[in-house]
Image (cartoon, rainbow, N blue to C red; front, top):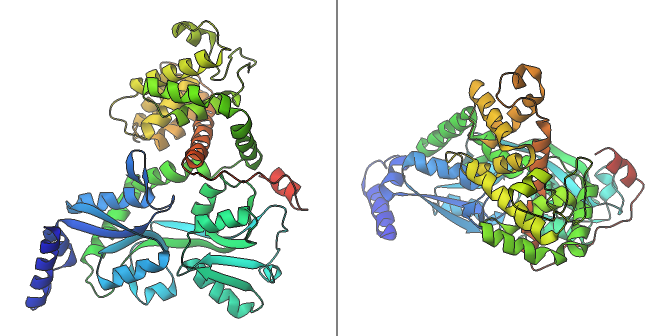
Length: 467
């Protein structure tokens, strides 16, 4: 049926003196066809279905058009431009940079993001102080990408550079090759690097090749401006309404602050400590209908998976339960790993239930985590502050800004439950999100993470000290 509709539109366009606007064609077809890539920074299929920043954003455009969103993925970024030019799809939402070579074939809409372009190397292999200093060492980039265009430009200035492009890989593959010593350098955008460095903590930025490179949706040239104009209006209103900020926080907010040393320790502890507790986390997650990886991430944030951990305030065990919480959950021994993990799972599940039904996932999860850390009623106070400020109390990005205000008399004196060290739950949630991200990656890949390189070149001590 979709094929017949598509053919009907084509016939209509071919027999009329002037084609109807593309927006009208899309509405007649009942579909918005979009090409993208499968990467953590664009689109992927997660445990709850399709996700990713590009998916979330373009889904809103399809809703605005009142049509079905049809996502088509390609194996290589070099396949995107031909799909749009041929008219097989209506647009590309694939994290594309606006480059001169692409402008010759495509029209770009309003930029909705900007990224820095980094030259990436591995700690301990010697950081080049200039692009010329990278001569004689291997550089590989994704073919057909803005990174390839950048290297071609640099090649004219530095013909001694040894670089190649590969059409069969994504940036994530090249970052892995650098981390495992198979390659000296690659080029990655800041969004991609900020995600992947959690998995490969020895990767470093050698040089910034470009700052604030604009990212935009791409459309077929000479196809009329109706879809592009509607998309621009949608993106501008989404920016003003806070949707862009919410999507950015959802996928990248926890990646922008990073602890290299802590991440390397996490990877070691995953191999040395976690195996003895993994089954308990899985069973507890199943019992409470909570992702066991999330529970494991909470456990690591609380105790680094140490069953006999004790804090100065008296909280104990893997999940660091207070005495009052243990009594509330009818737990006799907080040091018993199974009791602690099952108790923590139940306590988190109860916080999740207390979050208002109007809060959607994943914001619902982040608010429940904050409640696990600081208490539900302080989160409730933060929601009140957000309402006073005219924000969205159902959005974690707004709650995360309001929670620290609970440490200021101007605000805590006005809410029912008073003072709280409100910055702590924000850091807590960010840390748990980072650990969860790594756990999802590890358990979703058969390959093991490379060992963290304990060696360091002359820059490493300075780099770590200044993070």
